[in-house]
Length: 133
Image (cartoon, rainbow, N blue to C red; front, side, top):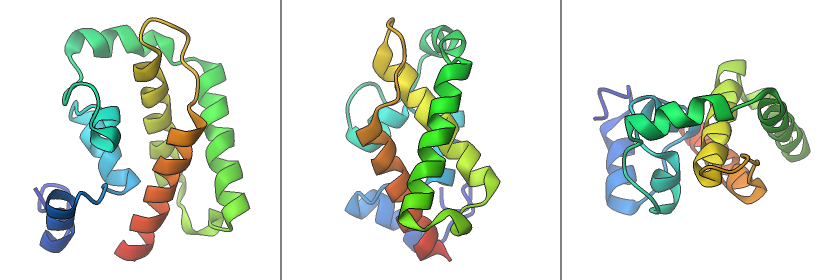
């Protein structure tokens, strides 16, 4: 798995043995592979996103939610003084993960950004990107 994600063996072992959450880029790749981000971060829900759930969630991500997620990420990074440390690609992946999480949590309702989950996800990305250099 460490090779698949281009990570050091010790990094992947830390995820598995000590429950350290993966950094944002790794979470985004796991989400693309069909893993449920909510399950990865909280242990709740299903391990994998089913095709039915994935199809149902696509139209639920709208401009409003994307704009809200972008604004949240940018404001958090500015407030924490970490905006210079994050490349646009990582910011984009965080936005995607936040939107997917909002859709998952909403079920059949209107997806809303979860500020607590958003702060936690961005904080994890900050911590792991600092460690990975």
